Length: 221
Image (cartoon, rainbow, N blue to C red):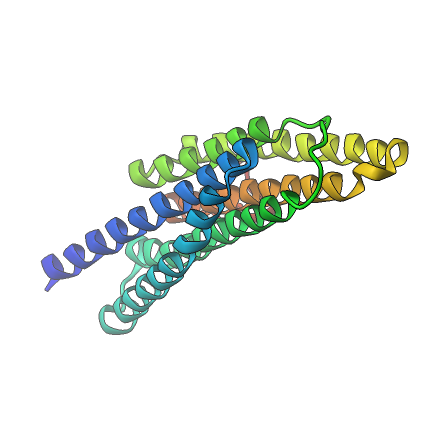
């Protein structure tokens, strides 16, 4: 029975990694759509959303069944609880990608404006946080997970700079308001991706070490 249980845990992990790949791809495509203005790429992001949502439900069902039938203890219990939370964060990463894609589509209805913000750089950092958090999950690596937490401040700072720059642009050039606001929202979506990566990293730390470091309360442990 224990062999079957651990096989089920492996299946749960593999499904979560599939979910992770889909969420990462959604963010990459949404960023590409912003950079290239290709509406076909926007549609790819939107079309992928139902599959991400469906897989989230499947993972949750497997995890809940394992909790109910196996009544795991200690590290296995923490693993399953962490998978449930990571699964939710990955689905929300997919949601942020959809939000970005929809904003990109709306921006096509307005004249192009040169904007004083580097969205691809922000997206690259946020995506790197997600990748590092997931690598920490794959390896069960607490130190790598802690590295993700330190990157969150950089994403927050870039989002704050975007807010300041775009707010100034709106005051100077009111005709650019629509495009600036859309880009401001996209920046905020990417900041939220960083937040979800942080949540994933915190869950890895909880799973491996048993420490609850949400809100960075126990980073010194």
